[in-house]
Amino acid sequence: MKEKEQPIRETEARKRWVEVFSALASEPRLRIVEMLIGRTVDCQEILNELSLSQPAVSYHLGRLERAGVLVKERNGARNCYHLNKDLTGLIELLKEEVR
Image 1: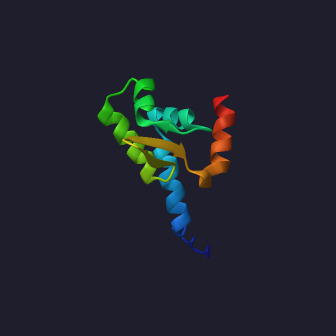
Image 2 (image 1 turned 90 degrees about the vertical axis):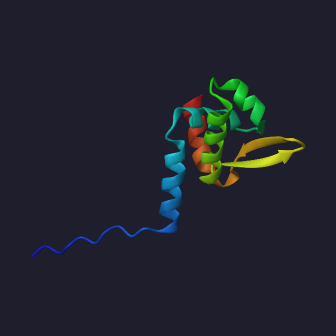
Image 3 (image 1 turned 45 degrees about the vertical axis):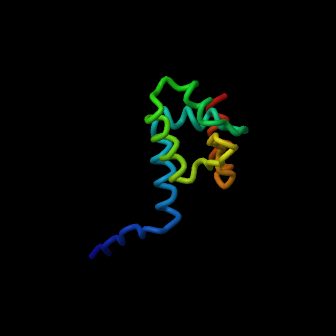
């Protein structure tokens, strides 16, 4: 008799990666990530670069921030964003694809 396969156990790390890849599964969010490779960008520059409304850009930035893909910092009255350094390996792969 064939032994019943055990279901894959959910781990915190797996849940985090699902969140990261889910956040990256969007053209506007990938464009934001491309803009942030190797630099910090303020929200206004992101808004100017994308042909989306301010609420849409805020939504995408929030989704990336909650997934841990990017980090928000205040610079005076402006919100600035940079990529999370903990995702360096993934970012290096994205750099290769972008270029």
